[in-house]
Amino acid sequence: MHWDGHPSHHLPLLLAARQYTFGEDTEALARYLIDDAPEGWSSLGTDLLVHAPGHLRDTLPRGHHEAGRRYAERSPSERLVITERSASRLNWAYVLHPEGIEVISTPGTARGPIVAWDTDPYVRFRDTPSLWKPGRPIPGTTPPQATTRSTAPAQPLPVSTSAPRPRAH
Image 1 (tube, rainbow, N blue to C red):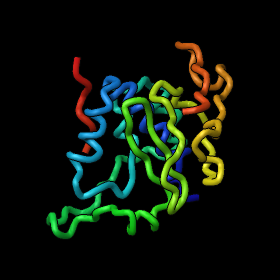
Image 2 (spheres, rainbow, N blue to C red; image 1 turned 90 degrees about the vertical axis):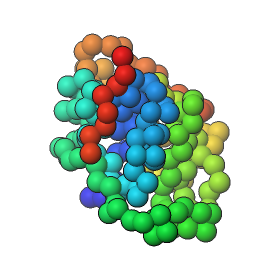
Image 3 (tube, rainbow, N blue to C red; image 1 turned 30 degrees about the vertical axis):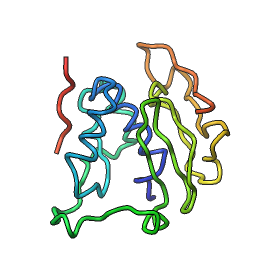
Image 4 (tube, rainbow, N blue to C red; image 1 turned 45 degrees about the horizontal axis):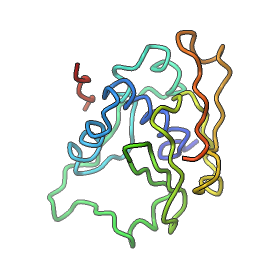
């Protein structure tokens, strides 16, 4: 099963990373993912969950506890640059905005819906590209409270819209 790159894998990791590991600091998350890794990422891993509560670290990876992998170091002239032309080869794109993560689902799609940063990382997101359209509900369901955690109430799902550094105190 290929799960890396799909919303069901990336969104919970990114949401939990921003909420816990990066102390709700979108800029710090962006620096880690983009500025600190100019070569890009082969896969995102559970090292993004370093400061998340134990129940999240145990549950979100669904048995796949692996650190993220960056592509091999390249010279600036050899680095992969995503342009409008090369983006057509991508299956999914995630754009970090101040209000949330924009999910662009299919090659050639200009925009996607935004998943708010305060979305519960336990949401089960669907990986069907045709469901990820602007103006439509986010394709995901929140699991029952008893199967997720016992420390905080579930948040409703919005409908419109190397290891990481420790979070700053």
